[in-house]
Image (tube, rainbow, N blue to C red):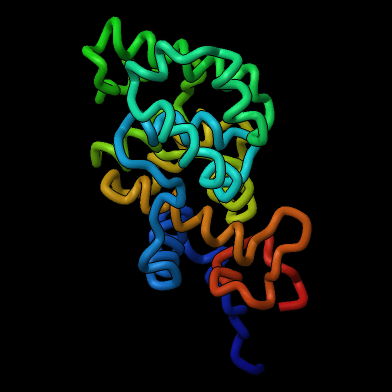
Length: 226
């Protein structure tokens, strides 16, 4: 009787979720060594404003809008006192411009009145600002202050984390909690930024390029034709 053949279990099934997440992180760092926030800004308040504008808008478009915006209103005090109609006109091309302009003005009024014109460095304080949820707060804390208290979950991070089998949730807060449990805290923003790069370049929403993806052997959603 021949020896029993034991099937080789692929890395997708063999590795634990945490092991896969750490290996994915290593590869993302290798693939995108210079990845950084693609929004242009010169201060924490400018990053806050740019991030608010980036909701349902590309970073490229935001970067086209902010030079004129920040030339006219460079800081929290000037934004807090800005004429709302003028603010709306300056951010119009980012979409949802009325809400964005209103939130920017209101957030900056709060920054001036409650935080001495300085963007706060605590999550709970940032969440008091109009138009600011955890995604925006995480971006500001990580990139303006080097403080990592959470994982930024945008549409790319949500889509890729689901495809990679690292979360079964669709709610950004639950996805964030899952990722925080899998990744070292110091790499929480490294993960988000590099996953965003990968989502733009390879793992696109409608037609992911699985054949060109260096994460495909770690991805349960990769094309079965690989």
